[in-house]
Amino acid sequence: MTSLVVLLLMFTGIDCIGFIVRKVYYIKFKKAVDKLTNLNDTLILNQKKLNESRNQLHALINSINDIVFEVNEDKKCLNVWYNEQAPLHFDPKQLLETSLGEIIGEHKARPFAQAIDSVIQTLTPTSLEFPSLFGIDKWFLAKMTPVYDLEGKYTSRISVAITDISAQKKFQLALVKNESMLLEAHAIAKLGNWWFNAETRENYWSGNLYRVLEIIDIPGGMDKFKYYIKLVHPADVADTINYFTNISTSSSSTFEHKLITPKGNLKYLKVVRGEIIRDESGQFKSISGVIQDITEIRLSEKSAKISQAELIEAQTIAKIGNWKLDLSTGLLTWSDEIANIYEIEDKAHPLAGLIRMFFNYVHPDDRPMLKKVIKSPDDITNNSYEYRINTATGNIKYLSIIVGKLIKRNGTLHKITGTIQDI
Image 1 (cartoon, rainbow, N blue to C red):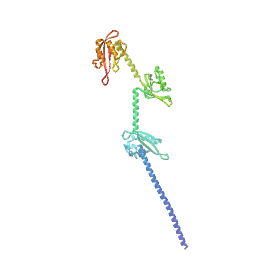
Image 2 (cartoon, rainbow, N blue to C red):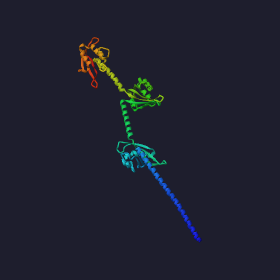
Image 3 (cartoon, rainbow, N blue to C red):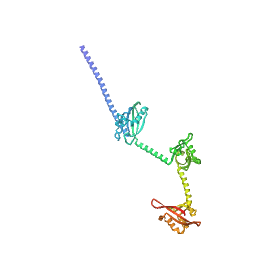
């Protein structure tokens, strides 16, 4: 009986222990299932966030229209992101797991390889502008940046962002072309720019101005203004110093003077003052302008004056004078020699006075012919006539008059010109 009780108690204890063990394992299993369920929920949530992040990344890439590559130090493309809806002239995915050199050739790929090597060596970003590698008329900018992880460690990878800069490049090239054309125009016109900062007392000269002045460099220990004044012709030094000293208040925007270049050439220069910049208190701040070489113009004027003097001398010897009748104003003008031929002093007459003068001096037999020439120039058929005059001193002269017509574009007569010779 005692043994039976002991066995009963033993089995009862074993059963209780088994129950407890089963309960413990059940609790552990339930906890594991709950943990696994929570982990699964977390994974689903993280997957959702990852998808949202991926969508946001694609949306960002689509919004900036860039192509972003990720390459390793062997220059193999590992990943690529781009706007798949945007039209492209090549498929970026063809670069995956390969190098650019294998696609376009090592020669064309060399600048990119050198830029990536620079990023690897210095761990600093760099950029590279390049024309399209696939034959279209476009320009791109490649920005290459080392990739770091969350702990700030370099991952041995480089991101390459490709941006289309065709519009900016076109504008830049247009600016360069316009600048080149402007410089060419300045060179043709013999113009040079100058600029002065009153605050720093700094003078700026353009390259064309150096060429106009025939200056290679400014001597050491001398500023531009002092050197410029040193080259000014001695007769113009005082006026030149006065003009530049008071340039911000001078009433004249232009000034001319002579200058002797370092090569010993005499030049006539025209200074043109540009805009005067003042600060908020009205104080002179800066000014700019141009200097033009007008040597040829001034020498041409001198040559013209000499030629005019020689012409007048030749006309005096040949007793030939020139005249002009403006039909719109009725004013007759003539050279001094015609006044000498007529032996009168006045050189200009209104039309009515001209007719009276002609009739006073012209021989009576020749007046009808001259009356027709002067009063009805449209009816003139010949361009040469001869007539006689009785001068105020009683001299009889035989004259030859040659008549020319100046016609407007609309076909109407504008002026009559010609010569008169004492024959």
